[in-house]
Length: 253
Image (cartoon, rainbow, N blue to C red):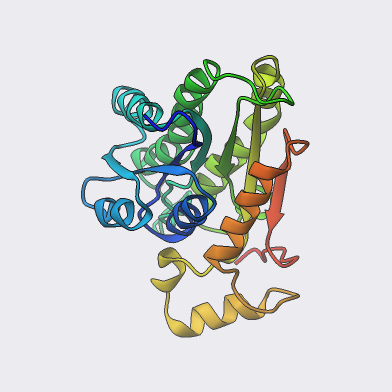
């Protein structure tokens, strides 16, 4: 065990924002544990950053518990970042006016909200056992919401609800974990250059980037990772959701 180094866990660390975060935390000296689906490139990412990969479904309490234990066995776990998420579009009503499958809504909430809560719960339990720093800090947990939490678009009721939940639990969790010296923060990204965005037609990507007031482009994953690094370093940041969005406010469609 690297008792003298900081342990960091990144859920959804095999791609997009999570990949950039894993790279940045490793560059800053952390021992990184990458959590992602068995089908992901998590093993390659872990090898690149000198950490370990634990295949996990964040909706499984049992799998998350075991994964956090593995992460804490590498080095004292002081940083946990939740980037695992899905964003399938689905309106409330189908074209024929009938409700879309309730199971689709439930799946998004389970992955995005319950998954974030589950990782947070087990990470907090591990961090509470850490020796406090000189300032009394034992760890920091950063969840990922979205600007959809505040201005969700048509076709995003499940996604917006799940990310709104991530935002809403930030303050109560920070208040509860304060006695353990654990901080809880949330980042709400706007239009980001990730595999999720890359799956859209080029014209759609360009249109979305043009909607950002300044700088008029999608955000980069390394900009998200830079904010993670600042949150880790700035111990007075706690209980807050930070929009990382170039001042965009999403239109209804």
